[in-house]
Image (cartoon, rainbow, N blue to C red; front, side):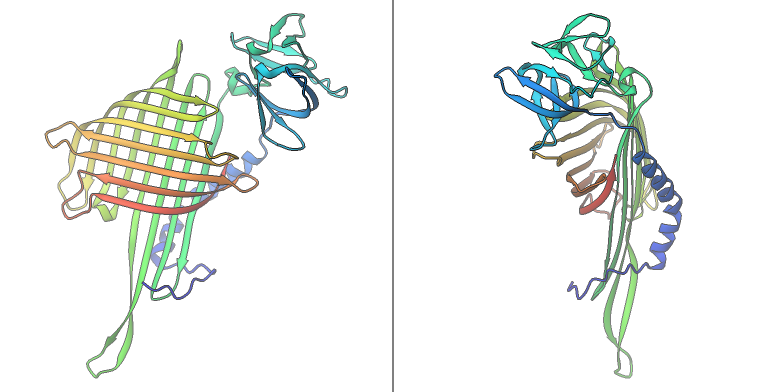
Length: 384
């Protein structure tokens, strides 16, 4: 294919327009939710605080956060400076800052100090008690960290493309990843919709020898999927949890009218710290597929899920992974594998760009359909 030109003006064919009309209410609702999140309350920083390190070094900065033995500072030379609490000797609040700070201790107690003062690694609380800085789990914890409600985070993104030339192509790809987290449980929702069309122009000769241009427009992708998960953290084993997941999807070009699965699993937080997050889950699902032409199937499958992300590349960028595997436990032992690997980096005001590689393998594909489907996407979205 030779690409002659790409227009900035979006030209939407009728097939794609019908898909957009169906998705418009969802997009508008999502937009309202994103706008509302802009006005959510943010934790106030402790401004112009003097931090004295064990080697005598002095830093004047705003304290942005303190969590699990690590303090985050905003200084004139770094807006995201992280220091281990073991290196801190004293913290002296500015004369103007008399704000009451709430501390969540590692033993689960919620205490207060006003202002935030540390002397030789010790913190004096408002009630006169003295605790070690190392015994503090969080400074000014959010309500959900105190067992009140959920923390909501997510990413809504889109990949749109309009190309005109020898082959005209229109691509619409929307995705939503959202998570509600509390100290007791977690709810995860993932959804994506892809609607693509392609129009090919070619010359043909008529019976009288005249040449004319024929254009043929056909859909090239028509699929969607919704995945939901619920996790319940075990009380005395907080890195372990029990959960249930469900999925519904359709893919016209894979001959799948509707495929769904539902089942329980056991999960564990394999990694949860400054280096990143990595969750592993193992369980069972009952999966049913309603094909358009092929014979429908139902079977019990072994299911595993791996999700994670890391800031190993530095800055505010992140590398993320989502992998879902299902093994048919009947005689054929077919496997379904869905894997997405991406690299995202922020712009401003919550906007994020990402490059994604997705590969799906369907060992139970309908006859005449390819087992492997892969795609590369450049996405732009909003994270909160």
